[in-house]
Length: 251
Image: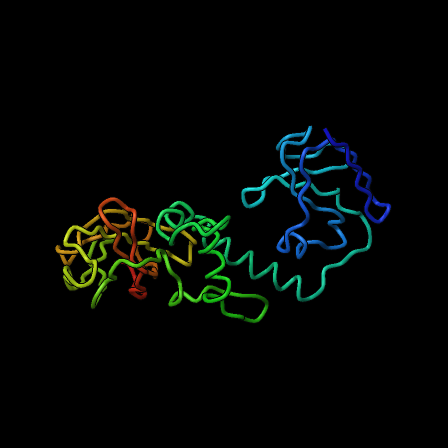
């Protein structure tokens, strides 16, 4: 058993009996700020994997690893303008994507190392689907993806509003092109910006059917909605990169 003591900037002293203390990974080191004086990963320490505050140490689970850091300093630290902008960008994307987390976790590509499909979706929308506006940022609906993958996508999609809060979706049957199957399942997302509410539809039609009607709640009548659709295999293991169908006012 090895005993190790870590002292950083005379701000915090941590004495922990551990078996392994890994050096800081580059991605963790990049997160250090004046409020985060010490961060390290660890395995099988006397503390084990823990979450929360123990003395002057905070433990957490981050990207599949146990990490420890010192308590943040309380002082006159103020974030820079760039840091505030980054926070606003992240907040805008996370607010938009959180209701779609379950869907994105299933259909937005495959896990890459410690990055989950939801992590990948967040990274994509941060870099590709944000537009700067006076006072902050907004989502560019034309760039939003609800799924991402190698399955053959939707061909010549159409969207129209019908009576009683119904949306008519249509497409061409491109079964047999590439890996497209007649029984691939339709997935669609309807978002009402005015109320920030979603309607999520999974397995509501097949590729060979070429059309489907989506019934929305009555309270959406009169609202403009944004619509995206995609196909996934019957098993849900493979998805297409989704298609933006446009905006329409619900009747």
